[in-house]
Every structure is written in structure tokens, then in C-alpha cells.
Length: 337
Image: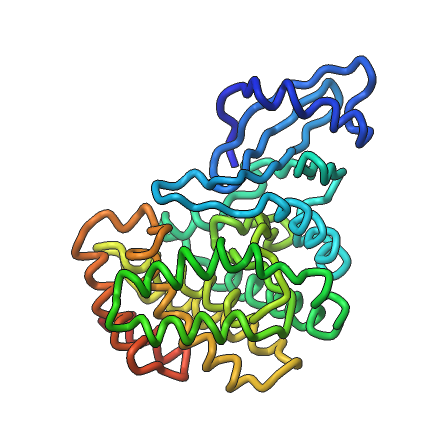
């Protein structure tokens, strides 16, 4: 997240909320700078005489080309997720500083980009660190395992009304409409994903939402959080390691190795269900998400050539029609293609 222009809207509406939270003194002024990077929220860097922090407010309509609307109460759900994860992985999330549910915003620590680079940027620059990918897998597995043991979280994070419109519809259902011959398969995977209630899932475990912190991965932007299928988080993240290798002229072997490192440390944490069943659900979701990032509502911006997108379709479609059970076999086949 990098700062951009001064925001008049933020400077008019947010200070009162910050005073209620005790983050701004009675006569204290603050400078607000919009941070770029997200499509679903307004995020501002707030600078006072003594401190810097971020304020995040959810948008009702996302900033993408297709019409994509989502409930704004996801802001409160994200704040609750940060509080929860902070109990298990204190260094894995930004510190939550305050919340105003009525305005749909919260304040959190600002993590300077020069000290906490975005993992996506490293991957796009072909700086692929399998050891860091392994940390991501281990921490994601820890979150899923810890939450699977706490049954009350299923009620507290029963957020299907957000997860459906912001994940299942734009990624799975939109892709089913773009590929009618595969629609039955994709719709069945969507229904199974929604029906699987096993752990607390982030919903957007993408390298753009993971910082390379000094103490390990820092997870951001859990707006899609719900108690659901951990296979979705795992497939969503692994998918990006395939996609970064879909660019013309990029050697795929390093991304394949990072894929295997992440999957390996993740599966070492599984204690809430049978590994084979979880891997099968992940392996079925993976090619659907792969195809979704060229033909769904949120295509990745870095596959700019039609032959790159066509290679994704050529690889994903047969795997949707006839699902593979083994994740590493999928990664190996992609690396060879």
C-alpha cells in the first residue's frame, strides 16, 4: 500500500471517529493520504504530530470494470478476524488500534512498505523465495488448525452473505457462465465449497495481501473471512504461484518449487480432517480459480497477451472436466507445459 493524493472525503468524515477511538486528541489535526492497492475498500494513511496509522473503510461497490457489489459489514468481520488471528499469530497481522462499526471502519498499525514489501511484487520480479512460501503455508495451516478446534467461531464468522457475492459469484459462477460446457462441474464445486464448514478462512490469501514482514508473513485484507472450507484458502494462494509463471518468458521451475514448499508445510499442520479429502477439494478448486483469473470478474492484470491467457485455458479446462487428486502433479504438469 503506497500513499497517493490527499482525500477530502476522509478528512471530513473520519476525524470524529478517531477522536471517539482515542486516536486523535481534542485539538489535534491529522493529514490523510489515500493508499492505493485495493479495489474493495478505501484505505488511508493518517499522520498526526506523534504517530502514523491506517484507517480502512469498506466500499459497497468494488472498483472493478464489472458491477460487483458486496455488504459493507465485512469491515467489522475483518476487524474481528484480526483480533482472533492476533491471539495465535501476533506478528501475522497488523495491530488493531480501534473500530467504529457504525461508520464501517477500523484503524490499524501502518506497516512501512520499505520494511514490509508486498510478496506479489517479489514474485512478479522473479524473486521467488521458497523458504518464505513455506512460512506462508505453515502459518495458514496454523490458522486453519487452531480455528477448526474452536467450534464457537462457526457462529461468530457465519459470513456466507459476504463470501458468496465476493468470492463464489465473481470467481466460480462468472467462470461457469464463460465456459457453459463446464458449468455443471464448476457449480458443483461451488456448492461443495459453500457447504464445507471446517475452519476460519481468510478468503483472499493472495500474494498482494501478504507482506514479507521482518518476523515472517503478515496477512492483510480479510474482508471475505468466514467459517468455511480451508481448501479455498489453500487453492487461492497456490493458484497465484501458477499464475505468476504463466507470463511469457518466465521460467516456471522456481514457482513450482515455491508451490511445493507452501503445500508441504501447510499439510504438515492438518489435524482437523483427512489430508486426502482436503487435497482432493483443493485440487478440484485450483484449475477453476486458475481459469477464473482470465475469464472471471477479476482477471489478473499481468497476463496481457492473449497467448498467455489461452495457455491458462488450455491447461485448466481438462483439469476441471476430469479433476486431478494430487496438487504436486498439477504443478509439475504446468511446469512442463
